[in-house]
Image (cartoon, rainbow, N blue to C red; front, side):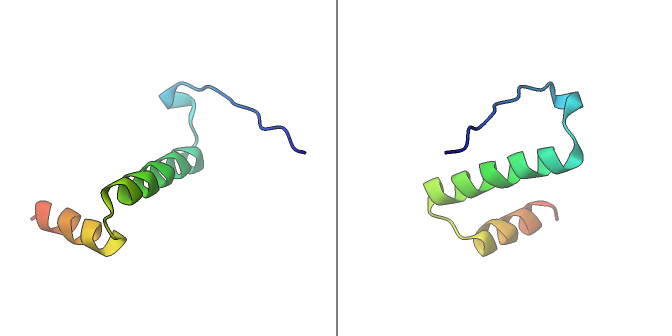
Length: 50
């Protein structure tokens, strides 16, 4: 059995890869909760930036 370690960091202490992993996990959870596909969200993002 492995033990997981929780590390608490200030936003400015996060590395780029740590921030990316957090955002990726949040996006996956949001998409799952909303029952939305990645393609749908990408299209919405592209539409809103125009």
